[in-house]
Length: 371
Image (tube, rainbow, N blue to C red; front, side, top):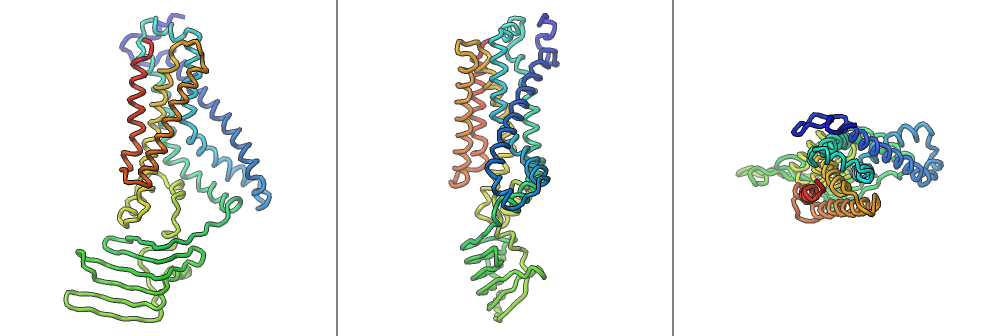
């Protein structure tokens, strides 16, 4: 087989050798990730078998509502690591079998040889983006519903000093809110116009009436302020609505997992308008869904660069060196996420800095790779 017949310098049309590399890349990736999924399912069954038996979970629900919905999440969770392992494994084998030398000796540049890797990595990056933003939010609904009924205890929630902006210029405060009783204490609602207070109502208790979808304020005091006037009234009970429900107090960051790309963007905008203190957590999650798929391409470039050279240590040496870089990459992702979530680091910058740093490392390693 003459490799020259498959390549023409300057041509970026896919040739037979390109399809061979893409097939090896994707085949190794999917084989390893499927093998991992089976292993994870076995361990997960052993961990949750007591819960399944305790709550009499039906076999059909375990298989279809839990594990089938569980698979996309773990494919996406481990995809970056296994993209790298797949690249290291089959590229090192190609280097050991002198296939890389044969390709480069035929007149094909190293940059041109990267084309099928980038094509395959782009396919996996697009898959990761679609999984993370559209497929997994849908499958997580069934998975979370199953966990609620058969694994986890019902969520209990009690928060102190709740501050929320429920619409422009309208602010709500509760000293304490309990999710089980749907009752809040020391309630205050204030409306501002051009920084001037125009309305305020406070109450000792605020109870949610789920039948009428209204709030019941007990022992309330109400004030309306005008330019030259002030009206006050108080009473024992007042039924009212003010654009917020108990679910808004019980919100959990895990609920991001059931929001698709567009729903999450709207949710972030709403939180920004309300001035919620946990806005940064949602912004980080939103930026991660866009930034993380690029890790697939970056790790692919690093994997090709470190494994395309035939070395005495073989696959083990390449795999060890590459995995060290990958774990440092993952560590950087976690460190900057924590800095954004609990510090004052800008979320957009925190999410993209690991990609930028390791993108530069990938380019340097590609330039140093054998030509």
